[in-house]
Amino acid sequence: MERIDLDAARKAVCAWLDEHQYGTLAQMAEALKWRYPAYPDEMAVVLRGMMAAELRRRTRPESGSTGGSVPVNGEVAPLRGAAGGMSPWGNAVTRLHHFQGEHPEVQFSSPVMGRYGQYTALVPPGSIPGESREITVTNPDLCGLMDELGDLFGSPGVGRN
Image (cartoon, rainbow, N blue to C red; front, side, top):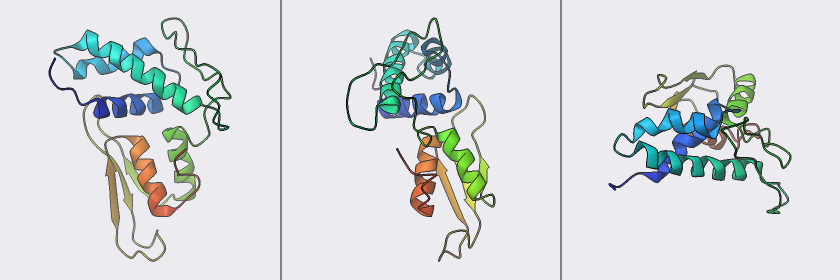
């Protein structure tokens, strides 16, 4: 098998989950395996594992305990966290909406559906205290973009889990 960028695959799974909060394992694998035309079926298995791991990470109780489980039977029912659900800031779409409410002056654009691209935030001059320049923030996934905006603005509603 040729070298596969697993970090890029994990980011694609994360971005897919952000956009399809109640998506199933099968839907995600079908949507993303086309990125690996030489090994679509093998990568579907890998992508499912990545999705299950990401869901465990997102639904892990804040206390640090490893108890509890996350249903991963995507063939039958939508996936939902069993251990208290996601943190309100764990979902990049929720974080985006909150950020837009706090900073309506920032303009966003997203990649064309089904293609590679960058999420972009255009921050006008003066929006960040002490910064007089216009700032363009780009990232291939929405999680990363919201993390970068959290670093820039220091906003609790934008920050990481």
